[in-house]
Length: 502
Image 1 (cartoon, helix red, strand yellow):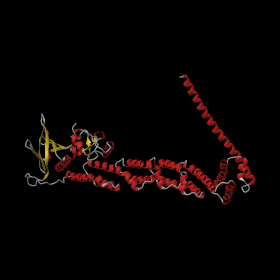
Image 2 (cartoon, helix red, strand yellow):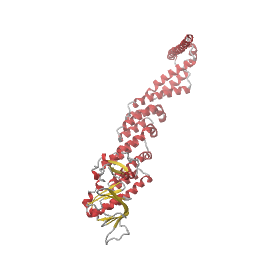
Image 3 (tube, rainbow, N blue to C red):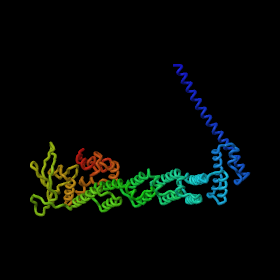
Image 4 (cartoon, one colour):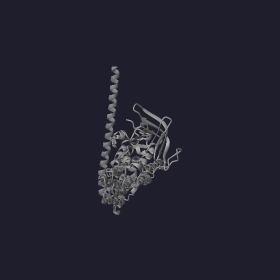
């Protein structure tokens, strides 16, 4: 065991010694090479000063100094580059300077292609340094942009070449400038000009700029739209601001529309459910829905169900205003009596000791409510109704006596409520305004908007996004308030299952 350990230690030491030796020899070789080049550079510069380019014998000097030709060529190219840097410091090479460079390249045995490459790199470094000083500031003034453009032209560089030279730093600079401009969610005309000036000065096309900010443009534009619609509406000023923002992001109108359509559909849904809550559609509200639908080119298949519901809401609103339907019925009516509702119904009522129910048929006329079934029958005048409340799949009616007070379960409770409301309204206008069904619809717009965003535009029970209703957690008739804490989004199915029971 001890012998093996000794062997391992010896091997490790041997490897370490070899590695140190390799490192030492490499550094020594580099130092010797640099010393040779330094000595040759001094000698070459002295000879150039003494003899000039016409009488310089580069090959003989290489042989005399006993320096490898590759090292000598590196020295010669370095000297040639220093002359170019001096000549182009003002941004251009005069004819006299061009002749000097030609003579120097010939004297130093520098190939034309190599000389051209050295000159190109020197120009690129000069342009990069000039552009970099502007980019570092994060913006370009008009005078600076003009100065940079003049330098590019004097150096004979194409826009594509100039951009390639500073591509990384220019891209980073544009990204920084872009982020600074859009950080406040607002882009002014002056800031748009600033971005354009930056692009033009560095030879960037709109496509180049768009590619630079592509990773964040969509999210930024979407976030701006969400902020703009946070109050449930978008003003013309906000639309103009969004259009400037779109231009700053480099988005085409088609691209911007594709980004916003899902958000606009959500706005359309929010507006619809908010409008539907009070059971009325005003002309302004209709125009608002139409504007969102057309401006953002919302797909017909997405909005048609809502448009169908709008027509139904208008019909029910007309019922509540007293424009009641006239139906044919199998029962014999009194002279001048009109049937407004007829359909299957389950009536539930409370007695002193229990809860009872009966299934039969409900008929509502201009003069009477008639419920008939094998086990229960009743009729009373609509003027006796003092309160109505919709819940789930039923209607809770309260009269000025025991007759008729109870719950009516029908296929269309909203339709029945609208008919009864309109019927009572004809006889007792002020009383109808205080019905629970009417008051519960009067949820303030600010509350509806906050609840919609809080619940994510979905039913809080099943996450459905269609047929949403603003539900009172504690019913209005039981003292529940029209406040954010007492309102939630439920789909129609979940609302019916809930039945508004505490």
